[in-house]
Amino acid sequence: MLPPRKTRRARAWFVVWPKVAAAGIFVLFWQLVVWSGWKPDYVLAGPADVFPRFWDDLGINADAAATTLQSAVVGFAIALLVGTVVGIGVARSKILRSALGSMITGLQTMPSIAWFPLAIVVFQLSSGAITFVVVIGAAPSIANGVIGGIDHIPPVLLRAGRVLGARGFASLRHLVLPAALPSFVAGLKQGWAFAWRSLLAGELLVLIQGRPPGLGRRLDVERQLNSSAGVMAVMMMIFIIGVLIDACFFGTLDRWIRRRYGLIDEAAMA
Amino acid sequence: MSSLVHARGAVDRTSIPPETEVRSAATISAPPDAAIALHEVSKVYGHSGDAVHALDRVSLVVATGEFVCLLGASGCGKSTLLNLVAGLDRPTSGDVTVEGRATLMFQEAALFPWLTARGNVDLALKLRGVPKAQRRTRVDELLETVHLREFDGKRPHELSGGMRQRVALARALAQDVDVLLMDEPFGALDAMTRDLLHDELEELWNTTKTTVVFVTHNVREAVRLGDRVVLLSSRPGRVTAEFPVTITRPRRIEAHEVADQAALITDQLREEVRRHSEAT
Image 1 (spheres, chains in turn red, orange):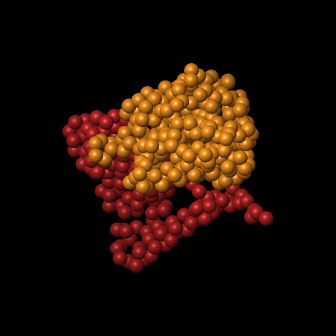
Image 2 (cartoon, rainbow over the protein chains, first blue to last red):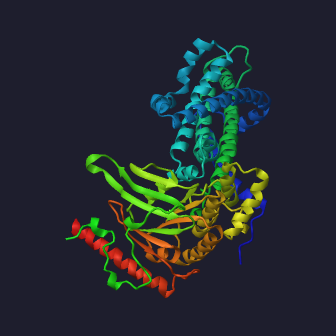
C-alpha cells in the first residue's frame, strides 16, 4: 500500500514550519539579549519595540523599497544583456577569451563599492552612477555563468548536435544555450546578490539629488536620528525582500531547472 | 616470426567450413553502388615521437543497403573510422567517400536532457527544416517504430538505458539518412534488452534498407547482425580480415550457426592477439 499523498496544505506547512520555528528561535534569542541588559534598550531595541515600529514605518519603507528595487531591476536588466553577450562572445571566440576571460573574473573580485567614487566623478550624483555600479557588480557574475555553462557542456552532446546538423545560430539556440541554462541561472543568482549589495551600500553612502530615498538612505536617516528601532525596522524590510527574491524567486527557478534537467533525484535525496 | 602486417588473408583454409570464406581486403574492388568507400585512409594523432596511428591505410567498401559490422578490441580505431565517415573529422591521408548523408549513434544515447523524448526527435526534424505541421505526425511514427509512443512526454532521466537508445535510434532515423553509423550503441545495456534491440534493429533495417555500419567488440553481436564482419586490429588500426555472414534472416543470437561462425571469428581474433603480443 502506498502512503497517502500529502495534501497541498500539508506540504506547504511541511516547508513553512521549520522556517517559522527558526525565526521564532532567533526572536527569542534577541529578546534574551535585550533582557540581559547588555545595552540599554534605547540603544539596542528589542522585538517589542521593533515589530510595532515596522508596522508604523511600513508605508515609508515600502516606498523606499520600491525605489531601491526599481534601480536594482533596471541595473540588473542591463547587466543581464551585457553579461550574456560578453559571456557568449568570450566562450565562443578564442581571441576574446584570452583578452577578456581573466579580466572578467578580476572584475568580479573587486568590491562594487569601490566603483562608486569613479562613478560619481563620471556620472555626477545621478542615478546613472548607481546604475553603473549595479551593472559592473552584476555583469561579471552573469558572464561567468554563461561561460561556465558553455564550457561544461558534455562533449558528447556537442557531437550529437553536430551530427544532427546544428550549426551557428541554430546550434546556439537549440543546443548551447539550453545546455548552459543551469549554470546561467546560477550566475544570475550570484549577479543579483552582487547587484543588491552594491546598490544598498551605495544608497547608504551617497545621497543622490532628486531621487526619492531608497532603503539604504532610510537606514542612514534612522541612524542619524539615533533610532535603533527605526534602523532595525528597515533591516527587517531588507531581509524580507532578500528572502522573497533570493529564496522564493531564484530558488524556485533553480529548482524548476534542476527538475527539468533531471538533476534532482528523489531516491538519492531520501 | 610473423608480425601483424602479414595478418591480411593469412588463414589456414583447411579448418574453415565450405560455406564461409575469408577474403582479404585487397581483393575487394569498389563496386559502383558503394555507399561508403575508404581508400588508404590514415588518421594520426599527435606528432613524431608520440604519434598515435589510430588508422593506418585502411581501405574498406560498403555497398548500398549492406549491414557491415566492424569488430575489434577497444582502442583499435573503430570509433575514429566512424567519425571520419560521419564527417566529424578529417583523415590525415587517404579518401573517404560517402554517397548521401550519414548520421552517427553513440554508445551513450546523448539525448538532450532538457527535452522530452518527443522533443529530442522533433529537434532532429526541426534542424532539417521540416515544417511544424508535418513534424508532429512524423515524430509519432518514429516513436511508434521504436515502440515508445506512450513515453513521448518523458525526459531522458526518466527513461531506462534501453529506452534512451531507442529514442536515440528514432532521432537518427528522423534524419532520413542513407547511412547509419552505430558506435557500440548497445554496449551499456543488459543482455535481454540488447537481444530485443537486435531484433528491432534488424526489422528496421529490413524496412528502410539503410546502409548500416555497426561497431562492436562483441563477436556474437557482430555475427547476429551483419552481412559482413570486418576485423580491425589495434594500434595501428588496420583491416585484418573480413568474413561474409550468409546465415538466413531473421537470425537468433542463440542459433548454432551464429555460435559456430562467432567461434571461428573468435579463433581468428585470438590468433591476432597472439601474433601481436609475440611481435612486441
